[in-house]
Image (cartoon, rainbow, N blue to C red; front, side, top):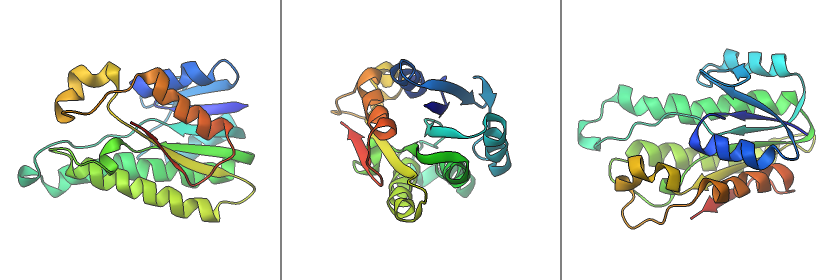
Length: 199
């Protein structure tokens, strides 16, 4: 199958490409790297990506910015970073992908452990990740032609713990190879509307 991985140069994206690459034809995509360029915040850019690739069997999104900062100092513009990038960026991909995928294709998005377990400085992240999980549950009911949609909610990755671990005290990190299994389950499995929690 032909699978687009958006955010393929990131920590999760690299693990997903390695996991899926052995038995799928992978198209890597990102804002500044990969075989294809795409800015997920721009719906027109996402639509153009699918026009260039033609019909595919799946898309994985491991991209999107959040704003991690104390809420008492946050501005509306800072809060919109996560809304415009990680939330609406992934919604843009799903909206376009539903028409570009082959019958029975899959859409896999990314939320995070902080959708269910609050962290300090995480108001933006928690709001966005919870919204993504709600979006997937609702969208799954309306998708046609057997197209499926799921979301992976990973804990902090072992590979990223040096940078983000201080925000997750007492949380057990997970290796990228373990997290990538959840993306494979979404791409290769039969389920839809699911949240695959890796923690």
